[in-house]
Length: 604
Image (cartoon, rainbow, N blue to C red; front, side, top):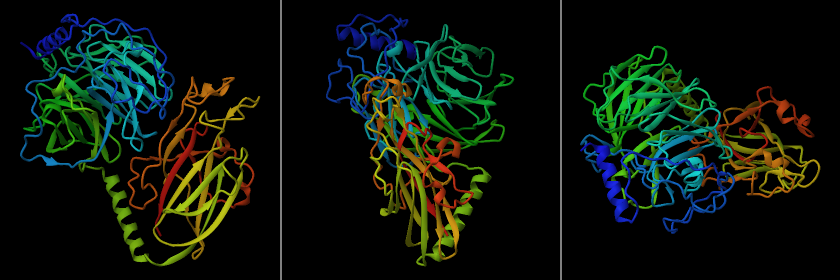
């Protein structure tokens, strides 16, 4: 009996034992009418019974939680990704290195069985899919440990969810596994942007996004699907592998997929055969990547960084690192790492220097270890480009110079202007706080402060725009009801040398910890209420220890630079003679980003 039929039989027996109708071996999908996306979202009560729809409270909020679970969601559809047998419990390679433990994020619910994870570097948010019931979760690398519900189970007919990716426009793409469906959501408000079907698909598994298209692997049928337009309606069977170098067998075939940075080449992994293949997008030519004797059976999610590819082997609970040749035809290395936090890991996302790894627990079907988790672990060393090496060497030289000057105090002058409010710190010590309270609607003024310190300096800033409440609006109920906007600019002068040694620019690392409203149509509501309708909001606590010099801010995005016309600086700005290199900084959205934390290290 093949693995898929065996899985279906097991699920059928389980459903019969529970008093549910027997499953048809062929999945039957009933479409669930579109429903409003759910509301605020800290995590549901983990003590809730399995029949209850997770409830939501307030932290990351799209709009409205359904009061009842969908009644027409088919219970007989096998939703888990087909699991190869046998499942090896943990790493068996004697040469595997323990990459160590890290942080764990949790998800409420006992039927989650997560599979896909995708990271949005512009916000620090990441999204996780549930194969068990189709729930989509959201978290932030600097946010709470418990993930929130981004989109509830069954919404838009989404009864299961597998691979996910976030595109450059902030859209979350979701693969629907055996349902043959594909969904696209706006990460700003949780609304459904588009949906697609893949006619006669087997199991839509993972995806790769390029500038021109989104490509989907099918683990059961020898087709690579493609979507090029949000209005397309149906996914295109772009490439048929019949007769190609890729051999489809009775089991789990193509699984993970990645694209090179220029989008010219796709790389896929064949789970059952343990092989990597490259696909030339222009010619559709398919060829095997020579990886020698590197074992890659049970290969699942992958990450490509320059010419280093990381492959998760789900049933082996391990991560394999491979260096690819310039033309991606040969792979060498094969270093193996694992973490004590892994529980049948399926996919991973790269955050800058860590991996977010999904613990699917597909090996624990029916008896999961609760709660389900996402592991955040240190990324193994990876091969870097020569340009990156030069940057690292330059940084090392700067540190050496700084150490030689340590202890030599200088007097510094900090000059800053904010719309509306800021506080500046040397480490955790306050240097200056805006003299006009944040509760003042029109707070436009500059501040100048002097202080003594020794290099290197760790400067930290809290930036806030005025809002009346968590709707993110100003002048609520008046004719000029509106969203506010922000902006911040600063420069630091070493008075001993007379030189400007730091300015606000892309060297800043920043993170948004308050965003409102999540839907800008809130601005036009006659009676806007925070957390209701379009007026959802997102709030995160300040990350512990974020002001310390050794805090790891690699999770944070480089700040967004805004031009003077967009910020429109008012009173107080012209009181300062600005260095030409000083720029206005803020979060990605001047209107909805209401509180931002920023850090910069100033070396001599």
